[in-house]
Image (cartoon, rainbow, N blue to C red):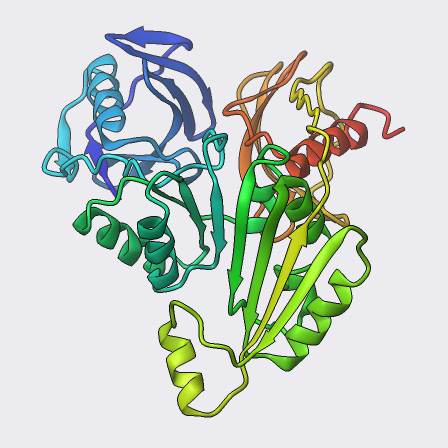
Length: 370
């Protein structure tokens, strides 16, 4: 972890500005930092040989912004650096093909969920050079591998997102996509609630698909096939086409293995014939009044979770709350500056589950628990 050790820390008044860096507040061992390009927290801890200064993992900034903050923090404390391991670190610039949950997805044409080794994703990109292909994957080594291959083959029309596909589809406009692929998803026979194929996912697929667009499920699991088929049969105005052991244009390394084992491969194509209305969502993440009567017990709901983890005192009127909110499978770690009118230190991603958690957070801790 990039950090420095300095010989002393002064009693400072906050807020305080030094150069292009603003030090906003001190919440116990955390200090709020704002630069021209970032907003994050640094942590200052007493050690036998001085004071350790490092970044907070939840608000991790780019190395360049961290270097600025460390430099100005040393200056305002009139301190000497005893140790540092940051100056020699080269900035790893964000990969233009790797998107964030807050990225604009309005130019996406085709989505693949769980692309694994990326064979099919790369095939889609080459076969559709005029379309933008989005690959969604939660396995980070697979993402690194595919990003390298995209760069090596100079593909300009592939985007990657490391997140839960069920959440990502909810961010895409209605009637936007021509194709959605879900090839060989984890069956999760013992934990069916973790399956990507469920009512919410199909609803979002139908909403985001154009008329005559399709969702293609390919699986080697007869249980997953039967489960998914029963889900599809509950819908009107769709066309379902089923194939078994039919050759496909691209074979994954897992499919190659299963074929050698003489396993059956099943395909379900769901064609959409519905024109969906556009979603009208206005996620207002503002607070009206101070959060009170905080409860540290995790609150689990159908679609989201709330967990107040810790409170850091700033002064008699302010405190910093660390919490986890949002989708149960992929919650977001956040900080709230709790004062007369609270605000998020960094705004949560504008997705439905985060907003639902935000509304419940206000209801639970509005001062009277009504």
